Length: 599
Image (cartoon, rainbow, N blue to C red; front, side):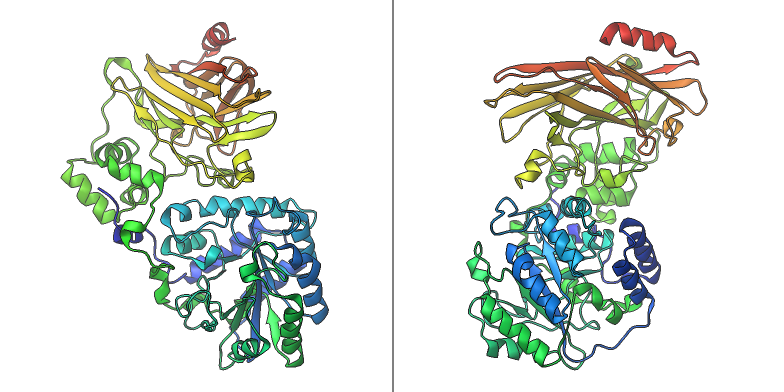
């Protein structure tokens, strides 16, 4: 069954309001996640102050796309005039260093006292549900680069929708990520590309994650038109201005001539307008009583349901609903809400579908026949880590296989096969978003590919990257564990040196073993082992060519990461491994057998 637009929306938590409790949690989260700079501390003090009435002549200045002229011309001019502003930055065009800023130049704008907002990594159309599904990862990549600048730019609290497109899925992601403000375009109140004037921002009518643009600057603007726009900053209304480059050589359709921009800013200064960044709207927003903005349920641009592109994993789940519902509800013990998020249905629709397919969550799953362990594709949707989750944003389920414990059919280890592949210290592949891969650097999206399931219970997949490097893996139940293989075929024209992998065994789903510590683990290449809380059960894994045996106490997880041989064009390299279970207090014989087999 394909998820409908209505069911996709209904599977999302409501965004029409943020409760006082949620708002307090949001403030605490911001305090934890960004640097306690004087600027930030001042902004947080505003949040605790009483709600202020909007004064006349209040203008929010915003600048999109990280254009070079923002650093060379706009920011110095605004600083001279004493104006505040928000600069929304994206990685999209940064390979053009002539016309767009570097991260360090963005840091310099922050150091001048201006707000840096997030404009995503790829500047994609997040009105499409498929793209909105990866919005968290895109924002995280920008956050990471900002934090690594010399200026240590704090995590943004403001976002601008790319191409001014938005939808309920993107808004919901911003709610979940603690964003406080988001600016949309002039649409739907005004038509794109015209000199029509958009809506002013009214904190009593507009949700702070859907702040309208009053004026979107084009080359055809005149000073008279500009005056007409800013004249609307009265009677509790805020004028929000959207500029791009001043000048904008790369994108001339949104270019503003510098001499004209000087006129605009001079007019604001001479007529005593107050120009602020978006974050400074906080004093005018009543977070305890956010407005029921009708656009929270809308999409811009509008599209019929058949033109919506849904997330790859959601589409695959609904195409094979019987398998995935049984996988989630029976074996992984998902709640109705968790399953709804994966399917894109409402919880009620999940229950109805499960009933029609005679799938019940009540009985405990039976053990597999003939002493085999059960292996299933991990369904996604539920976090696989207990901690360090900000290093596992928007993870792909397709590389993850759940290996169920033989003595507990509801506990499992999630094997990320592989979690990462590196060549010469550059990331060829990463199964989640954390550190930019070579594809992130090129703004290339790598979509999920699910496992292929075989009748004997084994799983396998093959993926071909844009540079024609292919890799794949297999997981096969065998006795009290699973045999695994990872291979890579070099279809590119260059040798791949320094090939390293990370294969992560996540322990969150195995409560006996998921204490966040390393004291219950043994790290001894080619094997690693973790002991149960009772001390008499073990989970072990080992790989050929093990280069590093380790584990994160926060996740918690096990690694016996193999190193692949250098791979010349046309060649294939492969390694084999195993994950298995052992009952008994003395695990040394198991480790010795692993050394004999895999070293």
